[in-house]
Image 1 (tube, rainbow, N blue to C red):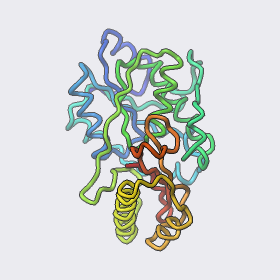
Image 2: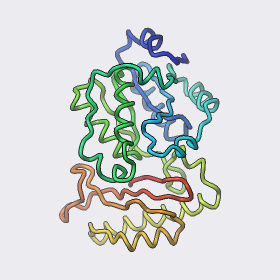
Image 3: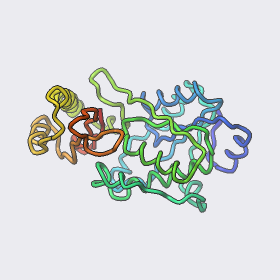
Length: 272
Protein backbone atom coordinates (compact mmCIF):
# COMPACT_ATOMS: atom_id res chain seq x y z
CA UNK A 1 0.00 0.00 0.00
CA UNK A 2 1.40 3.36 -1.05
CA UNK A 3 0.48 6.50 0.84
CA UNK A 4 0.28 10.00 -0.71
CA UNK A 5 -0.37 13.51 0.62
CA UNK A 6 0.74 15.33 -2.52
CA UNK A 7 -1.28 15.21 -5.76
CA UNK A 8 1.75 15.68 -8.03
CA UNK A 9 3.49 12.63 -6.58
CA UNK A 10 0.24 10.66 -6.75
CA UNK A 11 -0.38 11.59 -10.40
CA UNK A 12 3.16 10.57 -11.32
CA UNK A 13 2.63 7.18 -9.63
CA UNK A 14 -0.75 6.35 -11.25
CA UNK A 15 -0.23 7.94 -14.68
CA UNK A 16 0.09 4.65 -16.59
CA UNK A 17 -2.91 2.87 -15.08
CA UNK A 18 -6.18 2.81 -17.03
CA UNK A 19 -8.43 0.80 -14.68
CA UNK A 20 -8.36 2.55 -11.31
CA UNK A 21 -11.25 2.10 -8.91
CA UNK A 22 -11.76 5.11 -6.62
CA UNK A 23 -13.50 5.12 -3.22
CA UNK A 24 -13.81 8.64 -1.71
CA UNK A 25 -14.24 8.81 2.09
CA UNK A 26 -14.29 11.34 4.94
CA UNK A 27 -12.46 8.81 7.13
CA UNK A 28 -14.03 7.06 10.12
CA UNK A 29 -14.09 3.87 8.03
CA UNK A 30 -16.71 1.19 8.72
CA UNK A 31 -18.14 -1.96 7.11
CA UNK A 32 -19.96 0.08 4.47
CA UNK A 33 -16.66 1.53 3.26
CA UNK A 34 -15.06 -1.91 3.42
CA UNK A 35 -17.74 -3.30 1.08
CA UNK A 36 -17.08 -0.52 -1.46
CA UNK A 37 -13.34 -1.14 -1.30
CA UNK A 38 -13.71 -4.93 -1.69
CA UNK A 39 -15.96 -4.37 -4.72
CA UNK A 40 -13.39 -1.99 -6.24
CA UNK A 41 -10.56 -4.50 -5.72
CA UNK A 42 -12.69 -7.15 -7.46
CA UNK A 43 -13.50 -5.07 -10.57
CA UNK A 44 -10.40 -2.83 -10.91
CA UNK A 45 -6.70 -3.33 -11.56
CA UNK A 46 -5.80 -0.81 -8.86
CA UNK A 47 -7.84 0.65 -6.01
CA UNK A 48 -7.35 4.13 -4.59
CA UNK A 49 -9.05 5.31 -1.40
CA UNK A 50 -9.09 8.97 -0.38
CA UNK A 51 -9.45 10.18 3.20
CA UNK A 52 -10.35 13.86 3.34
CA UNK A 53 -12.65 15.54 5.82
CA UNK A 54 -14.01 18.18 3.46
CA UNK A 55 -15.04 21.36 5.34
CA UNK A 56 -16.98 22.70 2.34
CA UNK A 57 -19.70 20.06 2.65
CA UNK A 58 -20.40 20.85 6.32
CA UNK A 59 -22.88 23.68 6.79
CA UNK A 60 -22.45 23.28 10.54
CA UNK A 61 -18.99 23.98 12.02
CA UNK A 62 -19.73 21.90 15.14
CA UNK A 63 -20.68 18.91 12.99
CA UNK A 64 -17.36 19.25 11.12
CA UNK A 65 -15.39 19.55 14.34
CA UNK A 66 -17.15 16.58 15.99
CA UNK A 67 -17.06 14.24 13.00
CA UNK A 68 -15.57 10.90 14.20
CA UNK A 69 -11.89 10.66 13.29
CA UNK A 70 -9.52 7.74 13.80
CA UNK A 71 -6.90 7.85 11.08
CA UNK A 72 -4.72 5.15 12.68
CA UNK A 73 -7.65 2.73 12.56
CA UNK A 74 -8.49 3.82 8.98
CA UNK A 75 -4.95 3.01 7.81
CA UNK A 76 -5.04 -0.32 9.64
CA UNK A 77 -8.27 -1.27 7.82
CA UNK A 78 -6.87 -0.20 4.44
CA UNK A 79 -3.68 -2.21 4.95
CA UNK A 80 -5.71 -5.28 5.91
CA UNK A 81 -7.82 -4.91 2.74
CA UNK A 82 -4.62 -4.55 0.66
CA UNK A 83 -5.59 -1.28 -0.96
CA UNK A 84 -3.06 -0.12 -3.57
CA UNK A 85 -3.10 3.63 -2.90
CA UNK A 86 -4.26 5.96 -0.13
CA UNK A 87 -4.55 9.69 -0.78
CA UNK A 88 -4.83 11.96 2.29
CA UNK A 89 -4.51 15.46 0.87
CA UNK A 90 -4.31 18.76 2.69
CA UNK A 91 -6.96 21.43 2.09
CA UNK A 92 -4.47 23.34 -0.06
CA UNK A 93 -3.62 20.29 -2.17
CA UNK A 94 -7.29 19.80 -3.08
CA UNK A 95 -8.50 23.38 -3.45
CA UNK A 96 -5.55 25.42 -4.71
CA UNK A 97 -5.98 24.65 -8.41
CA UNK A 98 -8.48 25.75 -11.04
CA UNK A 99 -10.82 22.99 -12.20
CA UNK A 100 -11.65 22.30 -15.84
CA UNK A 101 -15.21 21.14 -15.25
CA UNK A 102 -18.13 23.33 -14.31
CA UNK A 103 -19.92 22.34 -11.08
CA UNK A 104 -23.36 21.12 -12.16
CA UNK A 105 -26.03 20.84 -9.50
CA UNK A 106 -29.17 19.12 -10.74
CA UNK A 107 -32.57 20.38 -9.47
CA UNK A 108 -32.80 17.18 -7.37
CA UNK A 109 -30.28 18.89 -5.06
CA UNK A 110 -33.10 21.12 -3.76
CA UNK A 111 -35.11 18.19 -2.42
CA UNK A 112 -34.67 16.02 0.70
CA UNK A 113 -31.38 16.98 2.45
CA UNK A 114 -30.95 19.93 0.09
CA UNK A 115 -33.77 21.75 1.90
CA UNK A 116 -31.97 21.50 5.24
CA UNK A 117 -28.23 21.56 4.42
CA UNK A 118 -27.51 24.71 2.43
CA UNK A 119 -24.32 24.45 0.40
CA UNK A 120 -23.80 20.80 1.32
CA UNK A 121 -24.24 19.27 -2.13
CA UNK A 122 -22.25 22.01 -3.87
CA UNK A 123 -19.40 21.18 -1.46
CA UNK A 124 -19.74 17.45 -2.23
CA UNK A 125 -19.80 17.88 -6.02
CA UNK A 126 -16.91 20.35 -5.91
CA UNK A 127 -14.59 18.05 -3.97
CA UNK A 128 -15.56 14.89 -5.89
CA UNK A 129 -14.98 16.74 -9.17
CA UNK A 130 -11.51 17.78 -7.97
CA UNK A 131 -10.67 14.19 -7.03
CA UNK A 132 -11.82 13.01 -10.47
CA UNK A 133 -9.67 15.61 -12.22
CA UNK A 134 -6.62 14.57 -10.18
CA UNK A 135 -7.06 10.77 -10.23
CA UNK A 136 -8.96 10.23 -13.52
CA UNK A 137 -10.35 6.89 -12.29
CA UNK A 138 -12.21 4.50 -14.56
CA UNK A 139 -14.74 3.86 -11.78
CA UNK A 140 -15.96 5.64 -8.66
CA UNK A 141 -17.79 3.48 -6.10
CA UNK A 142 -20.59 5.02 -4.02
CA UNK A 143 -23.22 3.64 -1.64
CA UNK A 144 -27.01 3.70 -1.96
CA UNK A 145 -27.39 5.00 1.61
CA UNK A 146 -26.43 8.47 0.33
CA UNK A 147 -28.75 8.10 -2.66
CA UNK A 148 -29.24 11.82 -3.28
CA UNK A 149 -25.48 12.37 -3.34
CA UNK A 150 -25.07 9.37 -5.67
CA UNK A 151 -27.60 10.75 -8.16
CA UNK A 152 -26.10 14.26 -8.15
CA UNK A 153 -22.55 12.96 -8.72
CA UNK A 154 -23.83 10.79 -11.60
CA UNK A 155 -25.55 13.77 -13.23
CA UNK A 156 -22.48 15.99 -12.79
CA UNK A 157 -20.27 13.34 -14.43
CA UNK A 158 -22.71 12.83 -17.32
CA UNK A 159 -23.20 16.56 -18.04
CA UNK A 160 -19.44 17.20 -18.02
CA UNK A 161 -18.76 14.05 -20.11
CA UNK A 162 -16.23 12.83 -17.54
CA UNK A 163 -14.87 9.39 -18.45
CA UNK A 164 -15.60 7.82 -15.07
CA UNK A 165 -18.33 5.23 -14.45
CA UNK A 166 -20.33 5.43 -11.24
CA UNK A 167 -20.71 2.03 -9.57
CA UNK A 168 -23.65 2.14 -7.16
CA UNK A 169 -23.36 -0.36 -4.30
CA UNK A 170 -26.10 -1.55 -1.97
CA UNK A 171 -26.26 -0.29 1.60
CA UNK A 172 -24.52 -2.45 4.20
CA UNK A 173 -26.57 -2.94 7.37
CA UNK A 174 -26.13 -4.50 10.79
CA UNK A 175 -28.37 -7.18 12.34
CA UNK A 176 -30.92 -4.48 13.32
CA UNK A 177 -31.12 -3.20 9.72
CA UNK A 178 -29.26 -0.02 10.65
CA UNK A 179 -27.03 1.28 7.86
CA UNK A 180 -23.38 1.63 8.87
CA UNK A 181 -22.34 5.27 9.23
CA UNK A 182 -19.36 7.04 10.78
CA UNK A 183 -21.67 9.32 12.77
CA UNK A 184 -23.20 6.34 14.61
CA UNK A 185 -19.99 6.22 16.68
CA UNK A 186 -21.23 9.37 18.42
CA UNK A 187 -24.42 7.70 19.68
CA UNK A 188 -24.67 6.60 23.30
CA UNK A 189 -26.07 3.12 24.04
CA UNK A 190 -29.48 4.50 25.01
CA UNK A 191 -29.62 6.54 21.78
CA UNK A 192 -28.64 3.49 19.70
CA UNK A 193 -31.56 1.58 21.27
CA UNK A 194 -33.91 4.39 20.22
CA UNK A 195 -32.56 4.19 16.67
CA UNK A 196 -33.18 0.43 16.54
CA UNK A 197 -36.85 1.01 17.48
CA UNK A 198 -37.28 3.80 14.92
CA UNK A 199 -35.78 1.78 12.04
CA UNK A 200 -37.96 -1.20 12.99
CA UNK A 201 -41.04 1.03 12.89
CA UNK A 202 -40.09 2.61 9.54
CA UNK A 203 -39.61 -0.86 8.00
CA UNK A 204 -43.08 -1.82 9.25
CA UNK A 205 -44.48 1.48 7.95
CA UNK A 206 -43.11 0.90 4.44
CA UNK A 207 -44.58 -2.63 4.37
CA UNK A 208 -47.93 -1.16 5.42
CA UNK A 209 -47.82 1.38 2.56
CA UNK A 210 -47.00 -1.31 -0.03
CA UNK A 211 -49.62 -3.80 1.19
CA UNK A 212 -52.31 -1.11 1.20
CA UNK A 213 -51.10 0.44 -2.08
CA UNK A 214 -50.70 3.84 -0.48
CA UNK A 215 -48.44 6.57 -1.83
CA UNK A 216 -49.36 9.36 0.56
CA UNK A 217 -47.71 9.92 3.93
CA UNK A 218 -49.39 11.61 6.87
CA UNK A 219 -46.25 13.51 7.90
CA UNK A 220 -47.70 14.88 11.14
CA UNK A 221 -48.74 11.40 12.23
CA UNK A 222 -45.39 9.79 11.46
CA UNK A 223 -43.53 12.76 12.97
CA UNK A 224 -45.40 12.28 16.25
CA UNK A 225 -44.65 8.55 16.18
CA UNK A 226 -40.91 9.05 15.58
CA UNK A 227 -40.79 11.70 18.30
CA UNK A 228 -42.44 9.27 20.73
CA UNK A 229 -39.79 6.67 19.83
CA UNK A 230 -36.96 9.10 20.62
CA UNK A 231 -36.23 11.21 17.53
CA UNK A 232 -35.36 14.79 18.54
CA UNK A 233 -36.07 16.52 15.25
CA UNK A 234 -37.53 15.10 12.03
CA UNK A 235 -36.45 16.87 8.84
CA UNK A 236 -38.37 14.72 6.37
CA UNK A 237 -40.02 11.37 5.68
CA UNK A 238 -40.81 11.08 1.96
CA UNK A 239 -41.54 8.53 -0.74
CA UNK A 240 -39.42 8.79 -3.88
CA UNK A 241 -39.62 6.81 -7.13
CA UNK A 242 -35.97 5.91 -7.77
CA UNK A 243 -36.37 6.25 -11.55
CA UNK A 244 -38.27 9.53 -11.81
CA UNK A 245 -36.86 11.03 -8.55
CA UNK A 246 -40.39 12.25 -7.86
CA UNK A 247 -43.32 11.17 -5.71
CA UNK A 248 -44.49 7.72 -6.91
CA UNK A 249 -47.65 7.44 -8.98
CA UNK A 250 -50.69 5.35 -8.04
CA UNK A 251 -50.16 2.66 -10.66
CA UNK A 252 -46.52 2.19 -9.60
CA UNK A 253 -45.79 1.28 -6.01
CA UNK A 254 -42.04 0.81 -6.44
CA UNK A 255 -40.47 3.45 -4.24
CA UNK A 256 -38.05 3.99 -1.37
CA UNK A 257 -38.88 5.61 1.94
CA UNK A 258 -36.40 8.46 2.52
CA UNK A 259 -35.92 10.01 5.92
CA UNK A 260 -33.71 12.28 8.00
CA UNK A 261 -33.99 12.90 11.73
CA UNK A 262 -31.85 13.60 14.79
CA UNK A 263 -31.16 11.37 17.75
CA UNK A 264 -29.43 13.56 20.30
CA UNK A 265 -27.00 15.64 18.23
CA UNK A 266 -26.52 13.03 15.52
CA UNK A 267 -28.36 13.36 12.19
CA UNK A 268 -29.49 10.05 10.74
CA UNK A 269 -30.27 9.66 7.04
CA UNK A 270 -31.22 6.54 5.13
CA UNK A 271 -33.60 5.11 2.56
CA UNK A 272 -35.01 1.68 1.86
